[in-house]
Image 1 (cartoon, one colour):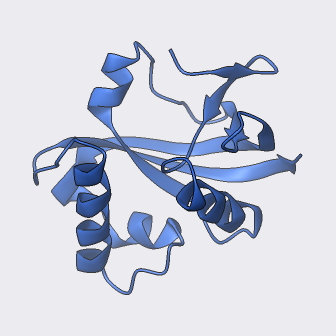
Image 2 (tube, helix red, strand yellow):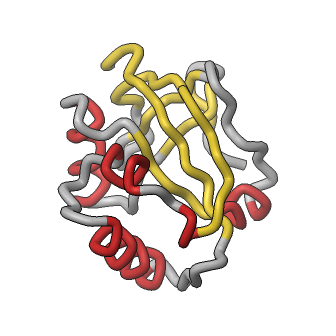
Length: 132
């Protein structure tokens, strides 16, 4: 199960350390309004998908909430099916869909889960409700 904070499921972006700090900063600045996760992680953690309107606690490396976000859209697709609109909304500065895919492939490979074009992913769109 994923952590719960103040009765909400938690969202931990990226991996601990500089990456999570960077991604959280992008969210708080309003530049990052989407993220992508592996569908297999939901099954491994016995978690259901987020749903539009669900509020989540955005956590830092120490498990503290830095914001409350609200899911505005959830879509399951293949890695190859991720749209440029979604990738650009991740706000990480990628100049193209190809650049976004290469960066995400590197990230998941480092995490021990290489992705293929057909790997199922969850595209989550959100908005900040409240910064902590």
